[in-house]
Length: 224
Image (tube, rainbow, N blue to C red; front, side, top):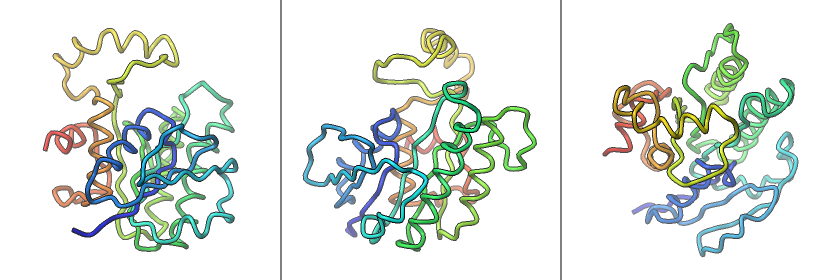
C-alpha cells in the first residue's frame, strides 16, 4: 500500500477537523500536516502542526508544501460574519494563493476544495457566497493539478454539538430530521462530507467525470 502525505488547511473548523480525524485513522496516510494559526492541542504520531498566520503568503512554507500527495482546503467564513472584502479574501484569495504555492512545491498533488451548493463560476450570481466560491473554483481548476475535487454540499448538519453561527443554523439544526426525511438531498452530515473529501484525496473519484461533486454525489460517496 502506497503511503500518502496530506496537508489540511482549516483543520480547526468542523469539516477540516473531521477530515483530519479521518486522515489520522486511515492506514494509507503516513503523515498529516495542518496549517494552523494556533495549536489544535492534538497529539498523534502522524500529525505535524505548522503555525502560520498569513494565509495570503505561503512563501516561507516551501519545505512544508513539498512532498505532499494531496491537500484538503476547508478554510472558510460564514456569510455575514465578516466584511464583504474580507469574505472574498478568505474565500478566493486564501484558497488560490495556497493552491499556487502547493503546486509549485508539489505539482502532482491532488487538491480537494470545500465549496458550496450554488457556487457560480460565471460570477454573475447576486449572492456573494455563490460568486466568490465560483471564482475560487474556476481559478483552482486552472492552477494545473492533475486532480481537483470540488465539493458543493448544501446544508451541512453538524454531527458534533457546537455553537451555531446564527439563528438560521440553529433553526435548521432543529428541523434537520424532518427536512432530511422529506428532502434527502437538502444537506449532508458533517462526518459524511469529511469522509468523502478524504476518500477523494486518497483515491480520486473514478465514478464521476466532473471535478465538481454536488450534494447528492457527496452522500453517495460517503455511503460506499
